[in-house]
Amino acid sequence: MTPGFSISLSGISKFYPGVVALSDVRLEIAAGEVVGLIGENGAGKSTLMKVLGGTISPDRGTIEVAGEKRDSLTPSGAMARGIAFVHQELNPFTNLDVTANILLGREKTKGLFRMLDRQAMEDEVRPILDMLAAPFGPSDPVSGLSLAEQQLLEIARALSIDARLVIMDEPTSSLTLSETRRLLDVIRQLQKRGVAVLFISHRLNEVEEISDRVVVLRDGRNAGELPAGGITRDKMISMMIGRDVKQFYEKRPHEVRAPVLEIRNVGTRTFPHARASLTVHEGEILGLAGLVGAGRTELARAAFGIDPVLNGEIRLAGEKLPDQNVAEAIARGMGLVPEDRKGQGLLLDFSIAQNIALPSLERLSSAGTVSTERELALAEDSRKRLGIKTATVNNAAAELSGGNQQKVVLAKWLAMEPKLLIVDEPTRGIDIGAKAEVYRVLQALADKGVGILMISSDMEEVIGVSDRVAVMRAGEITGILSADELTEHGILSLAVE
Image (cartoon, rainbow, N blue to C red; front, side, top):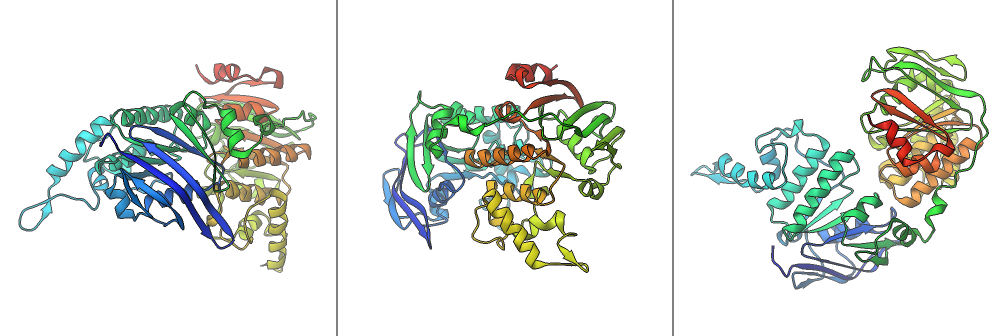
């Protein structure tokens, strides 16, 4: 990498009808520097990345790459200058092998008929994989790679074009703790090689750990910058939204009422020989903590009727629920906000109104026909109640930010006035401001007597929001901590053997 390489964006502005996406934004990145870029959803991060990647042109401003000033870039021009992306949504060609994915569009050929030179291609790819300590080889099929390995594949593809700057957009959102550690180690290796990294993440602890500097955007403008040694979570939050961190967890005690969900000695398909038991009371937020793979999601799916209950029983408001009957669980007042909101919680091509109405179609219908007027009225009420940011509820759910998509998933269950709501990783991949709004909704539901089972891998979230916390390991509940027992050490001691 050229020692003097640097990228400087100055005065970058982008306007859309009625919207200022970026206003006089500046950003500088030097060779071998890791810069954290943070901000709430809608702060302008995505637009700025599109400017860097050449997919949109700014209305004003200058882009300077290695001393060369330009008004804008093209996608091919950005790539030629060594700017590479590792996107949050991974889209590898799973029908091809590792080498074909890395060198796609830049294949090596030989002979008169320009046949693929597989040997030369694998020889080019192998050193890159070795540098990343990738647990797969050049000829391995991509269909067999895990999410973390696909992330490494994307990084390998970036390095294969002699990347000078690698932009990582939420690279750890789908990774386990150990996989995240490995990715952060890879970033440090890139830094030693002189590669610059722009690290975009809502996980502020990772931003704090890996960044040399942090640049904060708010409402399309620079909100400030934190230098090495001055990066703390509280300072980042304050600059992002202008509020104190203590405002996010306004936990208040809830009156202990009758049991609403009782899980009694349940074994799941993942842990058939385990026996899990817990009780959620009306008006209580019970956190469910544990390491990735402990069986928390599997227990939630069994309780909701998606997966079979191999042993034991599930009771809702004192009555036994039938096994594997989601419709009955919903009819009796249970809702589930799944971990994967895009794949399991929403119909992305459907409108916001249609998504919100889904569990309530029966009461919105007359003579078997859904009333569009009632559907829109319900959606509009939900939009105001939860602060869903959209011009109209007729827009497709796919057009919303992550935080607003999560609000739509919550809205569809709130509309049916549930007795119990299970939320699985309710704030994963959404910004700190949207998290605060989700917490507000959960607290308001508990105040009304709704029982909430909240599964979360965010230790601070579990402690800050829950009235009690049940800890799971290998399919079993290893302990339940009361409010005055909630500490990170206490939870971890029950989560690990």
